[in-house]
Length: 477
Ligand SMILES: [Zn+2]
Image (cartoon, rainbow, N blue to C red):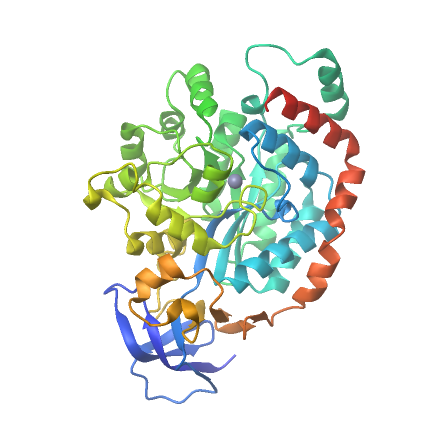
């Protein structure tokens, strides 16, 4: 690929000295950053950086591409209701739909400065051909992606009524449609290991992690298997954790302890583990996460949209927990613009906290999307900084925009003013994938055109399941 020089840009390095360089250059060799600051060397290709602010590409540490067609489909519904409708809108997709969903989400993320994401892939009935379709999309999108294979082998007890049986007509349909059939453990192991062996290439742009949908929907055998596989192949583990209140009570009644304590007993608490949401958690479990280096992935917009709660992120940071940030999927966060989640992360806890020293600062919120995300994807020593030796994942923000005029403070304007709309050029592994605010890596217009009728086709195909899901939402309005 040769060398590239981004010349004379403003550099928000987020490096170990946290330097802001008013005018400097970045020399890229292949997929890595070779030098930052004053660079005398010439390169094969030069990008004039004078109107740009360069920053490490953002890391969206929790999303679900299967939900890519779901923007604007749900408002004011409960967590179980949203889960049921989401099953109906994401089940039984063709491989082309799998591919187009991933490409559509990649388009949205790249255009708003996101270079890496964790895709918590489908929960139901996916086969090797679906994995292969998603992998093809990630390759074509040129984004860096963690494919979190979303698995389970137990009931979704948190989205069924707990105190009374289902009405008999729904029970009959449940048995007929079997919307969330658990897969035998041996099969899950096979698809996991096979996918890791085939596709896990962290030195390329794709990693594959085991990703239980939520430990409360998994047996101990499955969770232990995830730990063993993660250790054997040196990969991370990604999961939802304690997103809704009922998940805490289910854990207590199943294990006689908290979910975090249970995961500790199973040996899952380590820096390999990243947990989305983690809202319903007490201080001693926060301390457990900190001691074991577990990464929490904060999803403030999703949590607010479906009313699951406010994660105690300021306390987590003060306790030493590593915090990353995510958008969650399009059904609970309709635009996947990580800048909005970053801004919300900084502001969310402020009204309830009188001690301003305990507020999350703009710099802390930005760190969730860079350093925190890098930990979640197991690339802490190579992602999230403009620093020699780090990967050349870089976003250039156009300073000739209202957002950046006048230019007062790089961090505060990046967090409180920027919406992603000033993103001009994006590089992943030193390769330009967005230029002039347009995706250059693939034909995004064709993807958008192809995506338009797909949700209607899926609903038509899944009409039985869709009608079942609609009736379940009446139980959980
Ligand atoms: Zn999620």
